[in-house]
Length: 81
Image 1 (cartoon, rainbow, N blue to C red):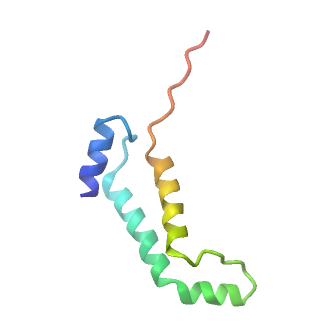
Image 2 (cartoon, rainbow, N blue to C red):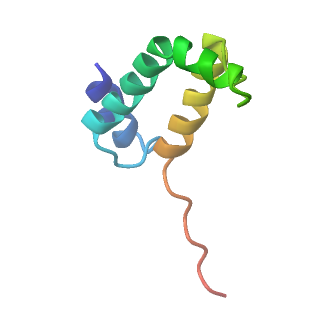
């Protein structure tokens, strides 16, 4: 499904050419780590390190921003005058 979405976005010019597999594992890896790491985040916070991301929505918004920027097509280079 991810491969189809990325292929369509590339074909429509909405996405830059990216590797669908690497995009997929980047997304899933981040989500799996987030859900598996509450004990680690708790220990870091107890040790005085600020770990403010505790809500899934905040993490998802972050992923949307990062992936959105990473998938965005490159800006055209202006022609010299």
